[in-house]
Length: 325
Ligand SMILES: NC(=O)c1ccc[n+]([C@@H]2O[C@H](COP(=O)([O-])OP(=O)(O)OC[C@H]3O[C@@H](n4cnc5c(N)ncnc54)[C@H](O)[C@@H]3O)[C@@H](O)[C@H]2O)c1
View (spheres, rainbow, N blue to C red):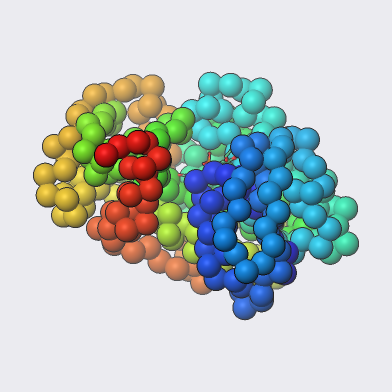
């Protein structure tokens, strides 16, 4: 099978590519080729199958990004939350027009591919107190969430028309993000674990009892791969899935950090930031997730495992990338 990853240079794109390279198969079928596409030229992981790297803008999608014969497209390319809020045109071009370009390309393939799209918890609102049902309406409170919800609708309609076969995964905030801080409003949820583990001080812009819906990178990748191989026949026109994340307080994240590295949370300074809080406080912190479980999406591991996984998978590479001794 031929797989394409759009956003193949990003955090999750690189992790999906590495996992596919290591597994050599997806859903029991051998991988014969992988295409990586990104505006930042992608780097191929070592693999038993050919890996084609294509640079370019998703809004002007070259055919080589989704070659003829592609079976599965992971559509992860995006302008993330705070960046999409700061630059309306850029967010709409990449997150909406980019998705339209993906649909147009898939329409021209001989066989409709599975498209796994990363939507977001940010496509909902409701705030801290909300527990959202699987069929809860998406009422976004920021441009990024609106663009994700719009892209979901286009992909669901394209599925109904038979142009492609979409699964729209509304990912929780993925923690711990390796490397450098990014422009996502939710970036500090990773920062409060990553930075102290690097020996660096970091700011916490919300109170310790703030509740957030999170997932580990390992589990997010598991879900993406699962979404690529499930039967969509029972999903009907509703292609959205709220995967089974974890609803946790900031204080419990810091406790898990201290369980792995005693005293590390002393490096977290409480510096309230009303602009960041305004964005993240709108996102619901708990989901019902019955649909995801019935479709076989794996439950989340405990919080302390999430911190240990960052140490095992990404801490050393992050240290090197940032030139820290
Ligand atoms: N990481 C999270 O916490 C999280 C949570 C919910 C949803 N998501 C979604 O998951 C996906 C992957 O997230 P991530 O954390 O890996 O993000 P990321 O920012 O690391 O990766 C996104 C990639 O898209 C690429 N990109 C941006 N503009 C592009 C363009 N015009 N053309 C081609 N490529 C372009 C970027 O270069 C980047 O490599 C995104 O769609 C994001 O919205 C992420």
